[in-house]
Length: 617
Image 1: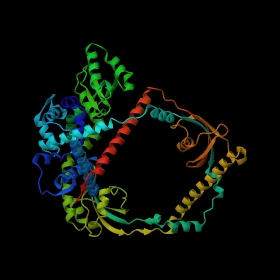
Image 2 (image 1 turned 90 degrees about the vertical axis):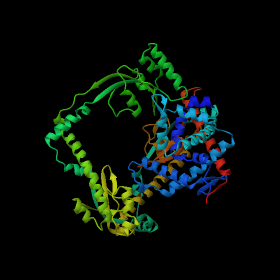
Image 3 (image 1 turned 30 degrees about the vertical axis):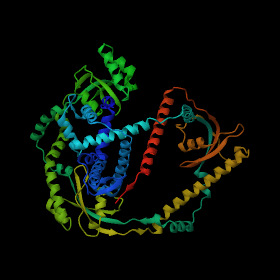
Image 4 (image 1 turned 120 degrees about the horizontal axis):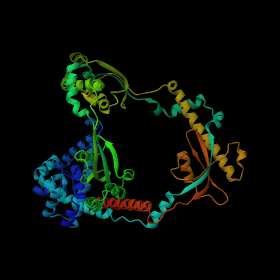
């Protein structure tokens, strides 16, 4: 096992530890270290082992932080705390079941194994050497102690050994994969006949009685939701910056200060990209050895790089400044000397060897060219501190005030109004879910308080209050009459078109000629694939859903598009190919085996969960 750890610590293990332990596995080591806390409240018991309330609440906090970080505009008011607690408890129970299963199978890591694992993880290294200070700091940033982290690694490693073993055991028969690929590559030849909506428009009649009946039968669809009219104050950094005066002298000094940044540096790079797989290290070693022996970087890029576009150009990526490439790629590129080749750089695309081919710098634009941009930047910089002060004052003042007039007058801000705001929101700033939730809260809606100060955008904050509340009510028939008429016309149009299509299909199957139906001519499509371009997707889907035609007669069906019904006549099914050892077949076989492995592991997890004795106080 020790040798396995040495071989995997740079890739798989690092991802497992950092990726999986951060959120849901940061708590299982404590009981093993301190021997448990007798009498500590528990939230669940799994086969006699407790999940403590302390541990549960810690992971709830971590999960809440994770979900906030994933939001485009983080807002604690948008978190569903009940759902988070449920998800976390279910996850902890499932993980505890898996850990117990690993223990039962006798899988374990020794302290020496864990030492090797930790010292080889790149996250804890400085200049290629294990650094204890970085290790301790990183672990503490996870909210864990060193002992907890070691114990969590011990347990999670063996759980992942079981998972990997089961998932990698997924198998798929070669013929099954080949048959699926043949079906996927199948093409079909068919004809279509379009019957437009105008062909039945003269037969459509919607009466007042029809409209009234629909209105009464679908009353829930005509409810106007509860609404509020609101008053609000907006504080924005942009508005404050507009009032900041920038002198010419200050502008010129700022221009001189920024001149170094304004001279844009661009670097021309070439790279060799390989997939981050089991053979990556061996492939990289071979490429480096051949480079050292004097072989051309360009020729090696053509031979090895999976970036087929740049590979044709010897790996050349052209010139680019900062902010273009992946962060790791950019950091490596801008640290190179001209002509140097980087160490392997991992990104989401794979592993790169990067060579710096050239560096060029543009001249600094004149002050006249940048005057407006620099004035705005400097004004925002100067307004930033003031904005933070005013924001704090507004938050305190609005919280204590009975209305918005006082805070607005005190801070020189304008009171604005918004009408018809529903629980689904309204015009900005009431397109922010957190602000709307506050507006419809009991304190604000019934208690007459102001909302809290809500950050609705980048350096934009709003406080609001309800001016008028209107309960949900049914819309009057006259207000929705025309909408109902259009709905009924569309329904009747589809019904009549389907009837016309079905009548034509029935006649064609009886042997009648197309001329008997007073419609247009067939439009022919030969050997169309499932992703055929130039044909309505609904039509293609209908053609591929029809049964194979007989030798004498085609198969018929229909498809409804936005403006017509289309009769489809399937004339031929052309078998697809699946060549042995082709890249497509190998890829599909690997994909299917992966799916099978995932299903087997999911079934294994469910079996363990179903057979576990779980109690929740």
